[in-house]
Image (cartoon, rainbow, N blue to C red; front, side):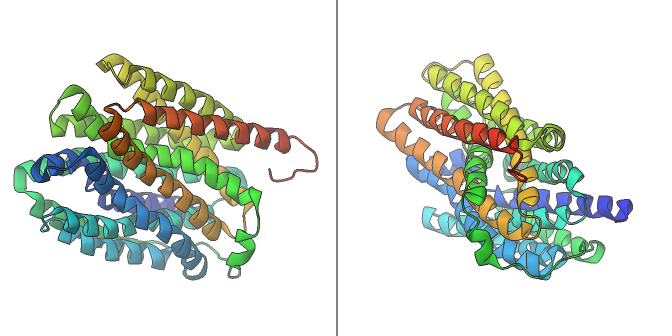
Length: 390
């Protein structure tokens, strides 16, 4: 394949993914403001931040299948264009129920991940897919853009302007992508049932992504409120610090893909879950008496480990499912999205009932232990001569 075409389409896909994540992440940076204005409990507030994750997760499965059939050049503009509708409406709705409904449909933008993975993977040889998909995953930076930009725009011009700006950005990106992108060569249409019947080979990747990407999304949407509760800082300041978490995770993702190309995704994942488990334990211990330096170190290193894990998992997806990357991406990506939905809700319930966030971080620790065992079995299996694609 032409390297220049591959690079151009990788840049276009990464940019489109970043814009989609801006739309997907509009609510979380404003959660504390909604809580104060509407007098919401912690549970209801964190439910509001988590709602966009639901539809974005569930749609990744059909969107992945449609991408295998129609190609990313069609599907990316469709996802971005449809997402512009709830983004525009978001600026003009009031009340908890209306925000929940609009937030749910903002989740459409989150399904874009299932478009970009098969689109990008199709442009690169197997030995370079890990790094290329890691670069594509840097579109997560859209979460940081929203975390910092949304409160600033609302403070300056109002929420109506935020909705309009987000909608125009989504529509413009959809137009440019359709005009400039080119689909990679595609194979025959994928039989989705065969992918679902692949068993543990698929479901173990879904579990690992449930924790790595789910943990990233959960922390990204939850961190602004957590920092406000712990340190009573401004919404803009909390958004800026939360954006730092996203930036670290984003730049760690291609590193995870690159290392997976060199030493294998299972080895990278073992390191990831050891490190993430230690960070989760640390945050649980300090959550009742937090201070800035320990919290900052724990959150930023956790971001790095989760970013490495995201890159490693999506090195494994096109390797294990080379003829059905879109369908497999949809399932694994849906699991990751759902992993981002539950933790904020659980954190809200724990905070309301026990007045502490410690138990939520204990839950993350338990999940990392389970995933560490899975990663160790993957690593052992990959070394067996009969295991061609662990």
